[in-house]
Image (cartoon, rainbow, N blue to C red):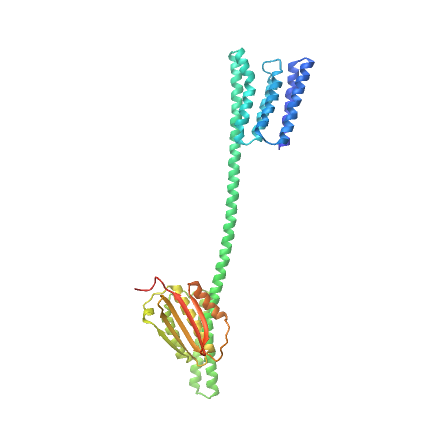
Length: 386
């Protein structure tokens, strides 16, 4: 762009200069001087273009052009004078808006110096009209370049704002995709825990019932007793299927008090699986209200602990204690006897820890005096009735 601008300026300047020479009809000496000054003007223009866009460098162009203009035998040589317009156009295109006034106004003063001189020595309507015409023409060019520069700056701001908005949009889209992935992962993990906790418990009960049925058949129990056990196993299988559907389709969102659910579970274990589970609940706990998430979490954690007890208990029995401590925490303890002192955290224990961690609680498991102890805590500060 800069090279094309210089080329156009040189071509037009040379054309105007050669016409002005024909118009001057100067002597060989003055012609030589005009050509030298014009060559200096063109040469400096090429040098200035390589030095950079410094506004004060245009002052040298104006001085050289002024010297060339004052060598004319006419008060105003319109062809030479027209080169001022080319210089102003170049400055308006090359320089930034904040430098326009500092550059173009001095060039305007230099360009109008001949008309000021003319008005001083020959004040008439013609000279006044020519001076005013050139003044308004130069002011119009200055205003035009300011307008063009303002449009460019506004467009640059709009493009910058668009790029920032586009970048922000892409970031938001990326965050939304990440959030969606996290949501899907959490939901998948939640459904996995639901399946493990609910279906795992039911399947454990089903296995125990089937084993009891096999034992009854081996010991020649009556057909009615075996049929009763098989019917219970069938009911347990149906319950397992229902729990699976609820977990997969996330339809099990009913708000159930975990204390009532635990009591029902304990009763079911005693009646259906002949698993003796002793339940002890403080009266203070009975008076508390729990959120849906707390109810669901506490029920699933205690259910998983009882499932582990059903699998590994040496006596087919367990004790459950639910109480409040002095810190305002809900504490539940599940104990069952074991044969070995060794165990490792599995998926079930990891699920219990994950569920309680999400509510700010904690859980610990240990073996002490041949008893497997699961102890959980859930802070209830601010939710305990005074």
